[in-house]
Structures are given as C-alpha cells and as structure tokens.
Image (cartoon, rainbow, N blue to C red; front, side, top):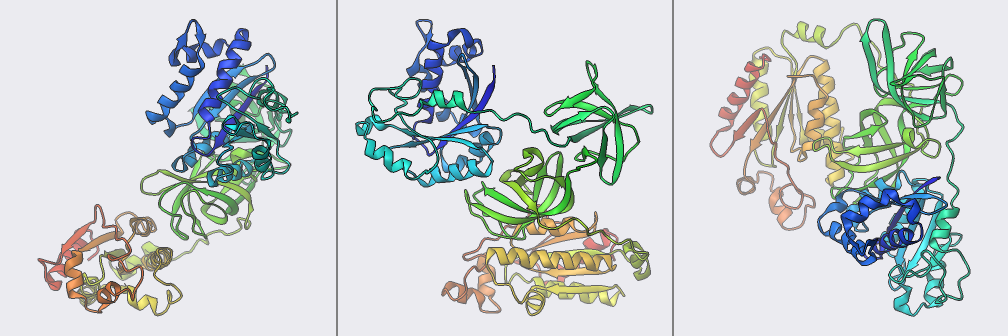
Length: 582
C-alpha cells in the first residue's frame, strides 16, 4: 500500500494530540487487519479489554508532552484499506517551532488544526507559512472543537474565509465528528471527512529529473578500489552514465551494494559509485548528470526560519550545514525568534545546490551557532545570488616570506574588556616596547577606527557585530603582511572574537582579557560615557544596557585592580615572547 507522510500543526492546545488519538483509535477498530505495526505502540500506551482505548491513548500522548518528549518529533503510524500513514506529531508551542519545521521537512501533506473558539492565531499563521515555504502542496484546515460552539456554521465560515482556496473541514476530534465518518451534526457541510481527504491526497512520485548523487564518504580499502559512498538525491544513477563532479567529467563504471552490483540506483538509494576515472571528489561533493549538473555558488537568496532566542545578527558568522558539507555563513538582515524572512546568505565556500522547489536535499540547509553547535535556523534556497566566479589569486610573496623579511612572527594581540578598563593604554605601551625592539607593528584602536573605516556604524548589537567583523578582516590582512597587530576593542560578543581568531593561523592570535569590574570601570569613567549612559543619553552602552560576554579561556587575563598599566604591558610581552613573536 502507498505510504503518506503528513504533519499535524497549529497552535498549542488546539487539539492535535486528541486528533491523532482519534485517528489511531478508530482506524484500529475499523481496519484491524491492516495494523500489525500499531500493536507495539498500543501496548506501550495502554489497552483496555484487548482493544486500544481512545482515552488512554490521548492520555498517553499528553503524558509524553509533560515528560518533555516534545523536544523531538514523535511519529505515529496507522493504516486503512487504502493507504498506510505516518503522522508527525509536533508541538504547538512557539519555543518548539524548530520541531514543527523538522516534522514538515519530509511531509507530503499537512493538517493545520485550529480551535474554532480562538480562530486563526499568530502561531497558526506561522505554521501555515512554514508549510508553504517547505513546499507542501497538500494542506487542509481542520476547524476543531466546534462541539463547544454548538457546531456553529457561522464560526466555521469565519475561519474558512481566512483560507481562500484551501479545503476546510468542520470537526470535533473529541467526539470524532468528520474525522473518520461523516456526522449528522454538520448537515450544512458536504465535503470529505479528514480521513477521506488524507486517502485522496496524490502522493508525488520521484521526480524524473537529472541524476544527483551526494558523496558522503570516499571508500578506498585498497589501491585497486576507489568508490564514492553516498545517497542518490534525485533522478536515477545508471551504470555507464556520464556524470560531472566539480570541473571533471567521467562515467559511472560500477554501482556497488552489499548485495552485489546494480545497473541503476533510483532516488533514495544508498550505494557506492565507482567512477571510471580517478576524479578528485570528497565528502559533500555531488555527482550530477553531465548534461545538467547542479549549480555551484557561495551566495544565495533564501527563505530563513529563525529558531533561537538570540536574534540573527547581520554579519555575524554562523555555520551552515548543507548536504554533507558544513561551511561558514552570514546573513544580511536581522531576524527574531520564530520570525520568517527572505534574506541574502553568504557562504565562505562554494557548494553544489539546487533551488528548494526542485530538490529538498540540495536546496535546504540548517544554521548552527559557531560556539555551541546548536541549531538556530533553517533555510530554503530560492536561487543563487551570484555565480561563484571568485577565486583566490596565488601570490609569489606570501605571509611566510614577509615574516622572514621582518625578522619575527606575525600575530594578532586582541585586547577586549569594558570601556574604561585600560585597553588602549596597555596596547599603546605594548606597541611602544615592540617598536623599540625593531618589530613591525600596527595598533587598531576602537575609537580611531570609528572615525574612518567604521564611521557609518552605530552602536546597536548588529552594528557592533559588523564593527568587529571589519576589524577582524583588517587584522587578518595585516597578519598576512607580517605585522604584529594590536587590536583594542570592547568587542563584547564571543562569536565575533572567535571569528577573529579563526581568520588567522594557529598560534597567531593572542586574546587579552583586560578584566576590570563594571563598578571600577564606571568609577574611572575617563570619557564620561558611563555618566551619559546612566542619564539615558547613550543607548546600547556595554555593561549598562548592552551585554558584555567575557572570554572563557583567554591567553592572558589582566586584573587591572591589582596591576598598573606598565605591569600589565609586561605580562602581555612575556606571553608574546613565549609564543616566539618577540
């Protein structure tokens, strides 16, 4: 029998668990011969008199939610004479929007549930938007709990007016009205029941498009065998077919499985492809039809769903996982928790891709926090924003040659701390000592840079991120020039300081935490900034109404309540000598 995957979604307490319980309960009673796979689940939830009990099943689903199992998506199974079903049971709470997106990502259809008494809520609209972005074309609106309104046709029609062109079903999941069978309680409704609608959904067949094979592992057990193991993401890979990977074209010599060689492998197959030539392919590459290969780009227009309490910061470095590859990424627009928007996303390396509408696997990506590796967002590619035609130019005189000419190793000395901590004073003393030793140095000071390169930036969190991102890039260029670069910036966020470290080589970054308590810095207040911030004249001032994230493991920590500036500078110089910089 055909298998339909669908999702139940909508706002919290609109009746999703009750509806799933009703579907499982009544399908068990009506189609017992087709439900062997349900037995284990019914025993786990509880039975009464040898039959699955509706109340116990619903109680069991509710208990799972109380136990926190909604952190993941729960999948339920049932069947009728016409079809088998897998339903993704996702929570309606706003903080679990990511779970709903996860369940919807593999669904063929969606049941958007709402409480007729409450009408269309913000979370209802958000779930409807995500369903649309994920390309789910079969959607039905289940107007639930009409029993509590006396099966009011007016209440149903008010909801239906919100969804023109989308089928709507008046329903009571508790009473089973229009879930499996038609009810006389809604004589004014002549459409299908929910089960009839689910059975009528046309399940899309695998697209007959060009072949796409994702390389997940290079299999080379000996010198005679080199295979590319992975999964067919689209079309059919055939033995003898001409395929392209990167800028090389070859043919498929073999398609290997544990059960022997195949002549072809359809979408969804996990196989090992042996190319006829020793092409340069690695994890994350895609073999595509030579006549119609996938695109390659590093900048995309994409729909983004943001799932983290910390807002998306324009310019902040995140990680994007697409296919089997993880790359750095940035976006250009801010997004708050549960917001959905269209943005331009830049990857730090070109990746094979297709539009999400054409290939879900090559057109979707998840966004990860660089420090915690937590999933913070999801993206669906619309199109490439620009072709990937930029290449790094190989240069004869490189960083090592410049360092040798200068007679010392290059390094970034990054001083971070609150305003008034003493960063600029200490940085100036360190540079003075290095200059006296004949070292090639440059000092990037936060205030000085804001008079020129960063004069267009304010002090919002997003502007602070961009402020530090630009300086990190400049500092990295100066390290390439062979210099010792001293950076004196508040740089309040760990993510941007981590970016600065990642831009240079190993042992070329020295983070110096100028550790001054807020009360001490505010007492010093050499520029009068804290007094202005306390009077409300300076918005987003670090330490007052904007956060400072202290380093967790800096190379140097300077306690300026016990160290004089010259003593602090000597501590930094000793560290640089230990690193072989001076």
